[in-house]
Length: 102
Image 1 (cartoon, rainbow, N blue to C red):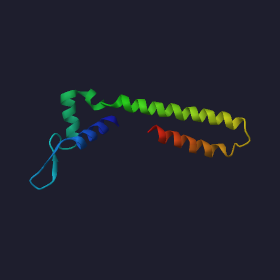
Image 2 (cartoon, one colour):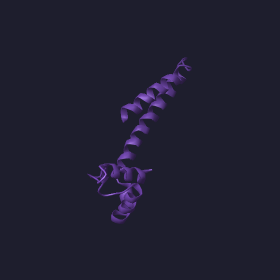
Image 3 (cartoon, rainbow, N blue to C red):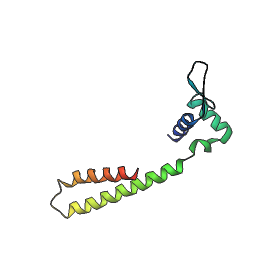
Image 4 (cartoon, rainbow, N blue to C red):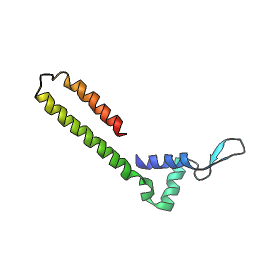
């Protein structure tokens, strides 16, 4: 998914000029495929994966938090009689953690 994200980000953030028909036209790329091709020619395959490390770091942090919460809730559910109530709390808590991580 990363090369497509990189291409779309570059296409959306490129400088624009007003064309003869009054519409905005990009000055660097015609479309995402053109962007991928020009990126490959100038930067190689590494250019397609720019910014991947940050996405991976954010995702791994969120996954770590979710797994910690899941482990905590499973330990609590083993020691309480509220086993039918725990799955609902589990979903609410994990969704809250996920939303706060973004």
